[in-house]
Length: 575
Ligand code: ARG
Image (cartoon, rainbow, N blue to C red; front, side, top):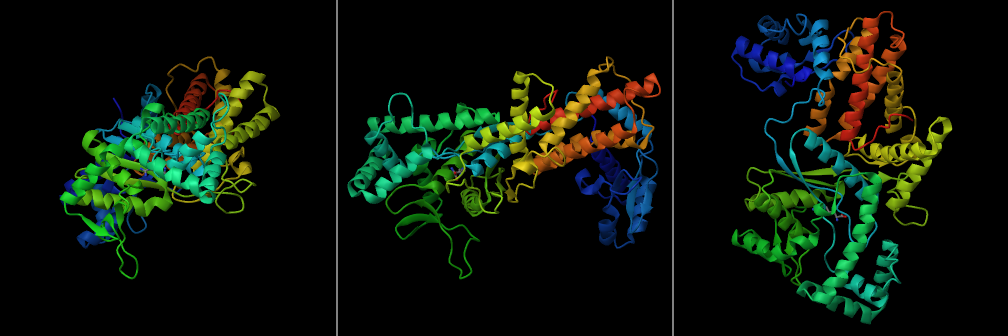
């Protein structure tokens, strides 16, 4: 049977005490139980302060009441009341030892699957056809994939969809350009950015080409077979590029997850009709618009969400309306999540407001999972020297080759294994850099920092894991389920950390914040290294102690592997 996370276990006991002491009903999450940073204290509860205010009683008195009604003796010592009214918990050694024994046989390391699984449509990656993916798409891809893995592990159903920018007016010029200059033989387009820019230049300088391009857009929208075939070539070619990047990254997206903008094209007119029928639309400057409440500038001018342009065409917003409708009405998603850069936050806020007004989000949770920009070391949005946005495939190759240098420095591995490991290290470093900071913030892309062997990096975690594995490789008794003994403070500290895995996963899942898991894994690796400094494992004084410490090491290794796995990062056994 799955055990509750430690904080959850304590919270439930506190909530039960509240009911007994004051007749107050509360969800365990409201009990404010968290890991304590005080020496000698494991967890603390901060509830008495807010409750004191609510009950108009001194918080310390409230804390004393709670304590008097707490039934906790199997889990912890009687809590001490500290400062203004904190409850300080010190967990019982036997209880911790029992809990660790519970983890030993549990593939999920103590994380119970969600009781009420949700069906989550997750929009991520979503690059644009006939353009290279850039670091912003990389971040969406990496974050989205980690979030998908976390949600699935938590027991939810994830419906990933890759909202490719594969439709719209630029395709007129792209198709004309491709027809004018088909790539020779089977070479394909090669450089998508160059192709796009060449088409753009022609469009801007050549009046006849521009006219042809506009006519081509009409043919595309009208479903002309030859035009569609050329369009498909562009999409296929781009998809090959994207798939190459996905393969390099080891993300879980496949062709079956592609739901590009074109997919929604047939339903756009209907979406507008529905909004009109709901009387949500207005004609403004010839365009069909919805003005959702609460969106305006300082002067009070309302912002429109444009559903049909003046020329009768549909744009990005209309497509997103149809997208929301499709995933809720047709696919019955309970959640709509979008992993897209922060600059689009207004777009999503307006989109959700309109969908809500139309009644499409009843009982549906919609959220924009925004993220900051990737900056170069000069603090500006990242570009290569030539002034073009960095090409992702090149960047990933560079990561792997830099990692190869690091691995070669001290590795005794053969050439083949070194190559595999370099890939895990290089790609891991790029992903971890995207994941380990609060996603809402910008971060600076710096090779030295992301490939550092110390600090909160994937390389550090991968080394920590490989070091543990090399210890375990020398212990023939690894697989035995020896009882764990927690005599030394360093053993206790490690045990407490290992027992927090479920808490960390839950925190990362509920805030769509993979960095919370990163921070936890880093803590785990650091706590392990302190333990290892202070507690000999293979050379422990007694056989029982040795077996117990091997258990702790093996659990740490499994925690790192599972945790990194949820972030989409590999943990090679040897480095
Ligand atoms: N293709 C867009 C871009 O590159 C991102 C699309 C995000 N998803 C959405 N449903 N709008 O900016």
